[in-house]
Length: 153
Image 1: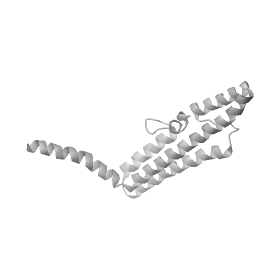
Image 2 (image 1 turned 180 degrees about the vertical axis):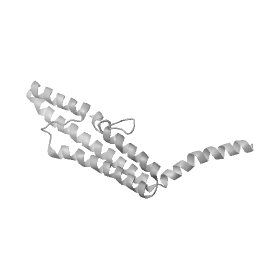
Image 3 (image 1 turned 45 degrees about the vertical axis):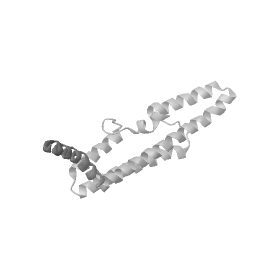
Image 4 (image 1 turned 90 degrees about the vertical axis):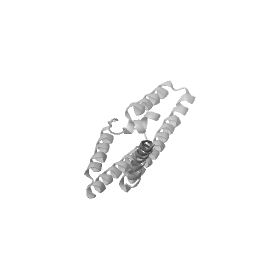
């Protein structure tokens, strides 16, 4: 009976202690909040881009302009596959992604700096690796921006 009780206590501690440590890490909490804000802004961006394509496609369809519809479909496909917006995209739309992306990059760099100042080199290295993966688009290290934003159009 005592072994069973000791095993239960060990299991509870194995689950609770890491969760408490993660909650006690304000740097990680700030980074996680920045990631959540990025995801929300990325979704807003994706919806705005989809709306812009739809707004252009509808009048072309109403006119029966197959050439224009085909062009818009090709532009949409380029966005879905490579995250490329056409030259004709509004500047506000193009800058929205840059602002979103630079905000998350700054949060990563801030977390690396805070961990380094706090002599928490292992955590700094983990966050640095996440940032490098995110910047390179390596989904094994971090989900790429194209998967977060573009893949949903």
